[in-house]
Length: 357
Ligand code: SF4
Image 1 (cartoon, rainbow, N blue to C red):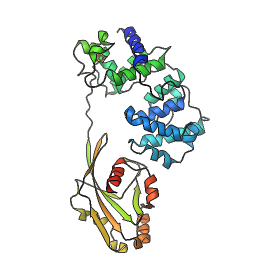
Image 2: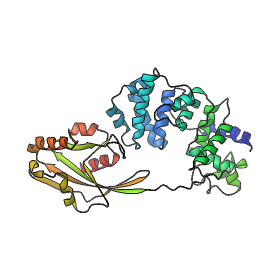
Image 3: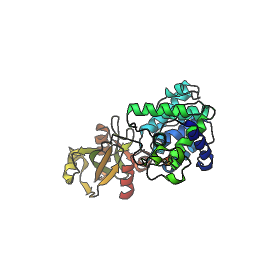
Image 4: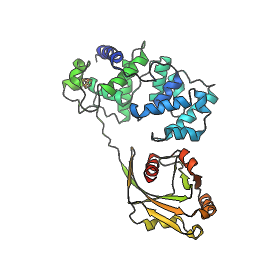
């Protein structure tokens, strides 16, 4: 395996093509960690405004550690994968209270932090502390698989180990951070998943996939994600300026965010009469105006497709105390419009509320 030209050309390519991103050119572990957590499973263009917002609100680790969790979650709103926001906050508190406000300075120590996996630990260790440990993300898999002609399934444990082993063999000990940034950026800009521009690629001469016309076959990934369809019927209950909301608990999507009372069905409900049992003893609410939204909202997550429709119940203001005790008894909350605005909500709910206005 001829490692030298690969490393050399990559390090030549990087300074000429790298994007000017705000978390580059720093060795501050807090900023590097923040950017890595935000960018996991997120495109740079989408993650950038979030990164800037967090850094504006919380310029230091201490600011983030001491921030109210509701605020941390609200700032994350719309970015998805909300467990990352919880882990972000937990990790900041952990570093602040248990490590004197300083990140551990090596890969092994970083791995012990909450929400910090091998990828993030390697990124912080190499970018901030110059430790020669390779980052291996989807971009790196692709570049290595194509260039060196490795057919191992990247979704398998064996494949991950093999690619990690190779990346750690390649990493130059005098420029580990730069090499890691270079290979990730190369995968993001040059050796892209679909139709990479091989003709103008500086690695073409030594690239297995390009020579063997296997660019579209590599990397090999066997497991197709199983997508689960779910059907939510939401009950949007309003009483004057107040709305009934529900905090989502653990063991399901959107943990810690707020949506509405809801029933999950086997298929999309076309009969809004189904919605009435939500109230059971609805006599305490007087006359309820029911507005059935025909529109079905479709929301795509990595492993799930959510189909949701909404039934809106308008309860007369004079029944507010009745609806409040009903909501409390069911572990719901009755919140005014200001509070509703500030709660962290799934994007699906935001979309509905925006369209419903
Ligand atoms: S020649 Fe094509 S497949 Fe090979 S590294 Fe370059 S862009 Fe990727």
